[in-house]
Image (cartoon, rainbow, N blue to C red; front, side):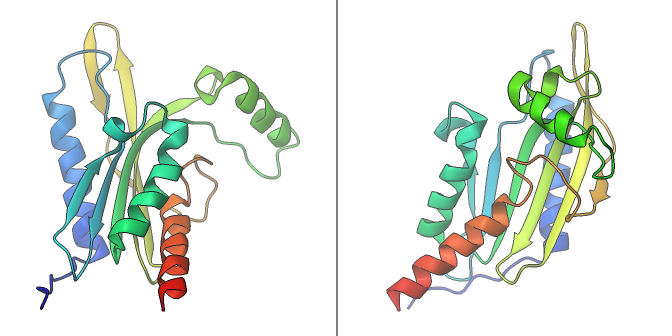
Length: 182
């Protein structure tokens, strides 16, 4: 008989993960130090899992594929993703929004003159409850990165397209696998 593990709430996971990311920031020494993408998974049937995706992927573009694969194997009920990324705000009613998105796709978001670097934490459960937090990252010559204050963000707002709804898609892929096994 497998041991049942108590699932943490989304608020508990968010506090743990944002607190951990803040602690990591305080230990950084070099200007190019960064937060590697990290996945936290919780299940009633397995001990918690923390996976450094920096080890699993060379390129952050591969993170979505790896996360979905990990979800299929672990089958979490609660998960969190930490990822640093560049973002640009493009309001939907802005006549240049499509051009901004196209240019970012060609030249990279970090090269946009209004790009900002953030650390994003997404927390979600298998029932669709979600939370997203962001903290700005400031890079200073010769000094380690500085992490700003955490802000809770509207999850439905447009965010980094690669990662914005990644946990939702991973839960859906995990559900499909479970349904096929029945």
